[in-house]
Amino acid sequence: MAMNRRDVLKGMTLSAGSVLLSPILDKLQAQAGGRAITPKRFVFVVESNGVRPEQIAPVGVQRTPRPQQALNGPAEFVDLALADRRLPMSLEPINEFKNRVTIVQGLSGRVCGGGHSNNFQALGAFGAGRGNGGESMAIEGETIDGALARTIPGIFPHIGLGISKRLENNVIYNISAIAANRALPTMCKPDQAYANLFGSVAGGNAQREFAARNNLLDFMREDVGRARTRLAGEEREQLDSYLESFETLRNRQSRLNEIQHTLRERGPVVNNKYTSAVETDRLDAQFDIGAAAIICGLTNVLTISSAAGIRDFDITFRGLGLNIDKHTIGHGGSFQGHTWADLYNMIRRYHFTLIAELARKLDRVREGNGTMLDNTLIVYLSDGAEGHHSRCWEWPMVLLGNVGGRLRTGRYVDYPGYGRQGHRTTANMYVTLLQLAGSNRDTFGMRDQGLRDLDQTGPLTELLA
Image (cartoon, rainbow, N blue to C red; front, side, top):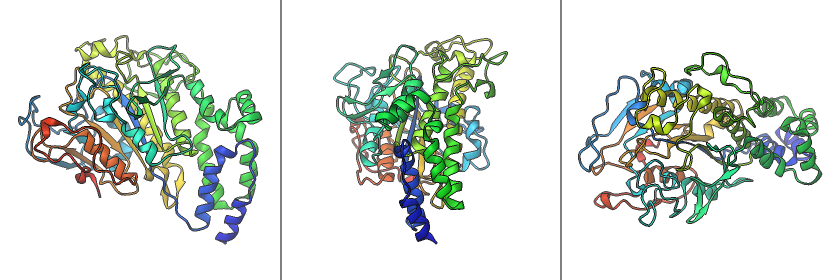
């Protein structure tokens, strides 16, 4: 009976792995007692160097030209189903989730200023900062991940993971903020991020034990074994699905041999990706750590930064076989017969390979009547808006997830041009996310004075179910 199952779960004692396993067992207990728990989660993947809008449009979709000036773009709102359309090359890795994908085009973020990177403004929808230009590191307000961290806090209200082009960087402050002039950290060394997150929640002797074993499953083994023997078949299967997701943390070797569409002539040297000098290895490791942090309930808000911020935007993705940095690519540079567009697509495709694997992990973990992916939204964008030298007339985004059915997905939407009736901004997108998380806010960031004749409040109702 449900009550008996619930009592068994309630009476279970834990030791070293209590903080890590308690959220999982709490959910199983609630489910056994007939109480559905469907927390909302948000993951932001922020890549440096801009996303050209035409590169994420479905194959065969020709966008109306958008000159970079007001009232000179299209007046119509475009809404197309993705079901019978091919995703562009760089988005192909998420094809299996196409019915949960929304490609959003046409949003502006002019208040952010533009440049090589919009830094905190990208997730903040606020001004570039006291006349210092679009590449200022001033923090004029909260960013959306910081706002969500206050709205749906977890054990860690916000976790920031990422990579920097500088191997010596441990923690940087580049794109996330909880309030004006209060930046949130991005941890750049996977091995230290792993220890900080999973070791720190243990504490005391357990923390020292974790450091010695340096493996999450080994650390949790005693509690896991005790839990499995006490659980009924249904709950045991769900616990196993959680643990399967942690198994990837055992694999500390490079997975680049699995990645197609690179320039590599032979397989890469196998590296410990947690300490690798190869940027693609480190990004792979950070996605693994982020997935485990979400699945075990450490956080509801995760930001993964791929060299975002003015200090790192010119990173070189040598792990993909490239010997040309993103700054040079942004200026039209080619490499081994591949154009700048080819190289942009290749790098972006690697990111979506990691996003797809993150989605699979979440989709394997049952939650309520569905899976964790059903209650998670992954948001991909660039800190550089629509190009290498952005002016923020457009800010392409890709969403994966429907947040419990509250988003209409499997769509490609393109908003009217800047200044046209129906035009919307990144601030409206961030209001949408806050309302999906349960907030009643209808504004975010700063108003765009160039759009003062348009209503800039409220969510993107066109996306809502």
